[in-house]
Image (tube, rainbow, N blue to C red):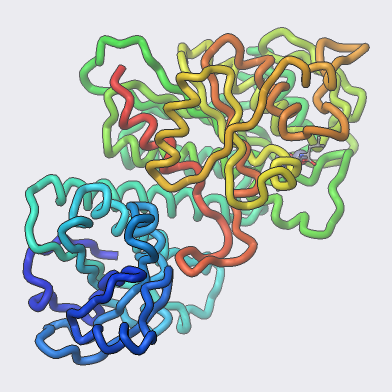
Length: 484
Ligand code: BES
Ligand code: ZN
Ligand code: ZN
């Protein structure tokens, strides 16, 4: 999609369809919309679409009036959704050249970026492996039109493009089938991206991990013929900020989760291809950061494995020694995410990361607790939690603060090793987080359980069904807003 910014009066915008926002309870008299408003045919309700042809005085061939909801509730996140919905509506009608008109209150940097993001994210489809593409439509040209505004708007347009394209890249990875996207292939995709955008890249293979003593990670991978990989991507700012902050982004990269010997039911198992969505989001975040250049160093670590049953697979009852030295009794081989994150987090600390955020499709329990609308957020540090929360709010990625207290540790007491990898029936998302905390402490750390939010089973007006790319935008903003 080609993306442009144009400064001109609304009447002059030349396009096949010009998107204008209409708000609830605010009669829009321009563009002949007054009558429509009075008759109730246009009300401004969120995602309401009214397509008008040949509007008098307009060069645009069509005007699409898009409901934007109540004006007092409107913000950049709402604009992102409205644009996504508008783009999806228009491309279903084969309209390939689209523009949006942003009026003065919405002609600021965050709105311009959000408009571009909404359009790019809304255009995404999971059609990579469809051979018959004749029904599949894409928007070719997207223009943000404003009356006036300085170069900061051009920069915002560019930022929106970079972030949304990175998010679609992460969604593409999460949607890859597990026979194609093996741990090594994920590493290869990360390598290619790193080369294109100028990041340092390293991959630790099985031998290297064995040498270091990553028994917890390797235990998960041992049942699969596909070798594991610990992917490391590094961004360093050109001019040292002088500060001592070094952000580490750790993403769960299970390319397929059968559950292992504690095998999952077959119903819906195919969805476990997205058990690497946390890893994909962190790789995607690095793609954006390589271009946006934050002032602090950022390192992403993605432990990539396939969790399979088999004659060599890890058994319930196995005891493994993690990189940290702690021993773990594996009670359930399906609780594999925490096992690979433990070693990746210890390794991140050894690389000098001072602050850690992990994103993982970790537990079914978080889906029970929060449904598909909020990421479960756990933290051992209030300041870092606040930073992540603020970034998430600004990016419209909803997160809910969950408890993390020592009481829960009792559930993971273990007679034969230092700790057990499951906590029992209750509070499954909390015990999973408590397990990781054992390895993250004392480094300030936030854990994001994205099992309910990384994948949409049903499409939204503004987003295709499938991978969402959450929490990529929050990670990008977190790094960009940090002054080390
Ligand atoms: N990958 C799953 C969690 C998951 C569930 C992701 C639903 C996406 C959607 C994870 O590895 C897992 O299997 N967790 C177990 C943990 C249990 C055995 C303690 C779970 O949640 O059932
Ligand atoms: Zn599992
Ligand atoms: Zn898993």
